[in-house]
Structure formats: C-alpha cells, structure tokens
Image 1 (tube, rainbow over the protein chains, first blue to last red):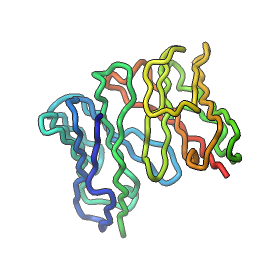
Image 2: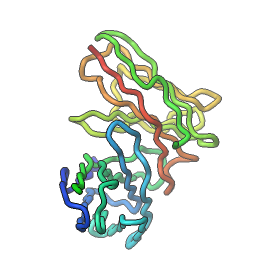
Image 3: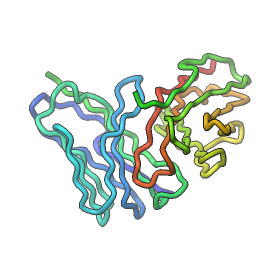
Image 4: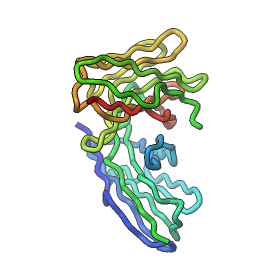
Length: 113
Length: 114
C-alpha cells in the first residue's frame, strides 16, 4: 500500500522567514503533485512534478522532486501571511493509468505577521 | 473557479438515510474522481470513472456507489448512513486519467449525519 508522509503536519512561522515542507512516499513514482487548501475551500493545484530532478517555482513557492530518495520538498521563501493554508502532496503510483492520487495528511501552515 | 460543479454544498441527514451527491466535471474532461475528506482519515480516494465506465476503486464502502452518465456528470450515492460518514466529499476531474495533469477539484459537498 502506498504511503505518503508529510512533515511537519503543523507549522507556525513568521513573515519573512524561509521554511521547507517535506513529502516522503513509499513506492516508486515519478509523478508528484502539490495542492493548496484554504479553510473550508477546495483544493487548488500548485505544482505537477513529472520526473526526477524536476523543480518548479511560482512566486515564493518552489517544489522539487527526487524520485530516487522518494522525496519531494516545498520551499517557502520570505513567507507572507497570504500563504497561510494547508498544503498537500499527492502521489500517482499508477504510471498515469487508472487510479486516484494518494494524498499526504497535509501541512497546516500559519504565517504570523 | 476550477470549472467543476458540485451540488448540494451542504447536506444534513439522519443515520440510516440515503443521499445523492452530484458532480459536473470541467468542460471536456472525461475522468471524474470522488474523494472523501475527514479530520481523522484525511483525503481518501473513493472511485474513478472515465467516459462512463468505472476505472479504479479506492477505499469506497459497499454502502456507497457511483456512476457517470452519458453527459459525463457523476453521482455518488451514499446509503445506510452512519455518523462516521460525516465528511467533505470532493469531486475532481481531468481530461483523461492522471497522465501528468493535475486533478481539478470542485468546492465539495459537506455531509453531516446526525
């Protein structure tokens, strides 16, 4: 059974600081997704990482994938309050075929002014 | 706005009852996925349909069933409801399967079983 573990599950940080969220998974996969969820809202796609060494950046967020280590990271640079949300990583272990994504439990991020 | 429409937004019902959740995927998307989100279980994949046919099953209970209609909208039927079925149910869609494209999620249906 595929397991996806995120670390940390809760993170409170101050504006202007940098931090990294880690996502480990237990099976071979080269497709990893990051989503953001605001309280009571839907999930918004942030990044799609499709190969070993893939790196994508959008604003203050940067995601990377190391398929050999089965690890993805989401790095936050100079955090701002608007980035407060829950961040999920999700893994596709089906090789792109029929299957659902397996999600981590999410990292609840609070950025204090 | 993801383009995925879910109705109703909220549903309150009693134990033992049956409810139907509805999802309209984004225009052009053939795949529909159902997920359940609860505090203790997190986001759990329930079932996937592709162009009217079931493609994959996840942690879906036997009391739950789904279908995708010729117009590609989907319904999730939950029966003999229990208190533990209270959760946020999301529908998501994609053009084909996953294949490197993200899933686009609807706003969810919050089900409360009393």
